[in-house]
Length: 212
Ligand code: ATP
Ligand code: ZN
Image 1 (cartoon, rainbow, N blue to C red):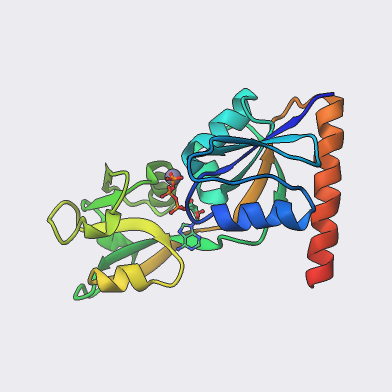
Image 2 (image 1 turned 90 degrees about the vertical axis):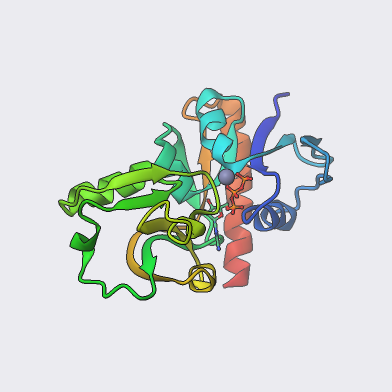
């Protein structure tokens, strides 16, 4: 019998709720710091613990059958997968922010300026839609420090409460994308794997109904 390979984030803002989701569905598996893979004891599934950025690509390629990833990452990487369910956790937004002291006139502020981000595709699309030409400076982490060290005049980063921006002397000026965790699946799952996924989706629906 085939097993469903499920990719979840190894450690980060999606991990706890992803693990909780499957536990609430009654699917038991072990999680350990150094574990990269875990086989469920009571459901035909293998869990793969990965960096979230790698999950869309692995699901597209079929290395994993199903994965949980932020919509921001999914759209940024543009991978061809089925979006099977919005999960309602890890809600956040991708926003533009500028130093607190800037007298912000609107999005045209960014014309000719440089913006640091880990989301160049989402940002470029937003700038194009708004007719703004800016230089996008791609950095992979700690984007908020870019203005402070003279690397960029603005940032485009993930925000939930805004606390990180504030403590780095920045203020949020535009929201460009809203995100939550999604369950995605490979586009050509076998009938057997599809049936396993349906069983999981059915259980998730039941859990969500019970909580509302
Ligand atoms: P990894 O090491 O796996 O690459 P990461 O540092 O890229 O991790 P996290 O910060 O754990 O990623 O964020 C994972 C996802 O959680 C983000 O892509 C986004 O969808 C969501 N997220 C990020 N920040 C927040 C936040 N402050 N509140 C809620 N959700 C968030
Ligand atoms: Zn990541």
